[in-house]
Length: 77
Image (tube, rainbow, N blue to C red; front, side, top):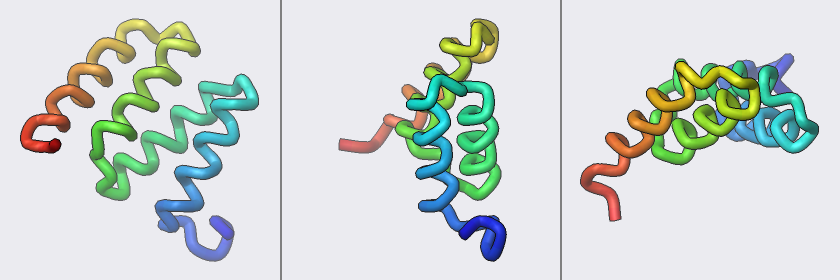
């Protein structure tokens, strides 16, 4: 699917979740970064990226991603 349409948000999100649950958070984090490039800056995407950073031992990025997730929550119910 992504070979035909590499901007398919749902496809990228599914692949990101797949790699995360296959214990490959490094690959998953690249997919979540792609979602952010595509304009998906929801708290869920930032939170998932933070978890990928945590499980990849990228602790410097982990905290900043969680901060962005919290900032994206402002105004949402």
